[in-house]
Image 1 (cartoon, rainbow, N blue to C red):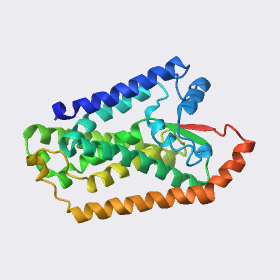
Image 2: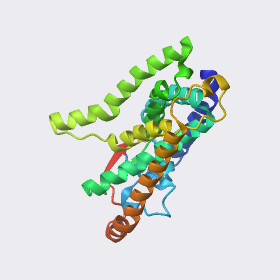
Image 3: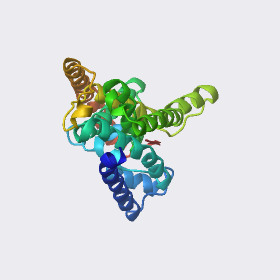
Image 4: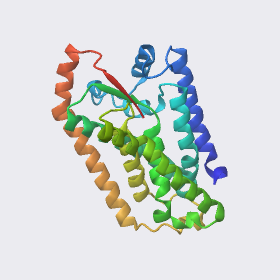
Length: 273
């Protein structure tokens, strides 16, 4: 499993490391409470709804996943990314790995935009790879449903069991825990729950629309989701994404432009994702 997926996981890790090194070089990487780090992350492409003007700012969807507030933030995300990336590529192939990456990040962005539309809160910015980490986790957890033949050896079964426990812990820390703290104690955290939840949803949807391309025949024959279902899920996902982006451009973006003229920075809080 690690022999198959290690290359992609290593490339992803190297890319995150290089971007973080650039952040540090530019004066960032000292944490979400450090003004210079905030400025560096924003300038390098952190997601910020108050300035998410389409089509010009669309790269922020993807650039924000490369950025991290400090070394601890980066390390936590890499710990979750490495095993899940390996497992996703092993079970779904390189095409599936790329699909999961794209769908997780785009869905995470859309969930964040929906949160902004519902709460009318434009005053945050976010960055971090945990939208991708949660997406890879969601796709990995569905292997037992989508492609159970990929679990037909002892090593795969053992890793799958480990990932289930790992995913539960990640859910507690990245989604369930912050929600519980808010409702029990009335305290909010700087953990980006919409980004995490959106990434997880995106990973699950990616698994349900997964093509069985460039896989060894033994694993390819294990796909249980009919092609028609995969096509329908993909079509519905595309329509949902298009509707949210169209609504944002038509109804929300003019408000953002008007407000931006009066409040050029706009950030009052940072979410770690």
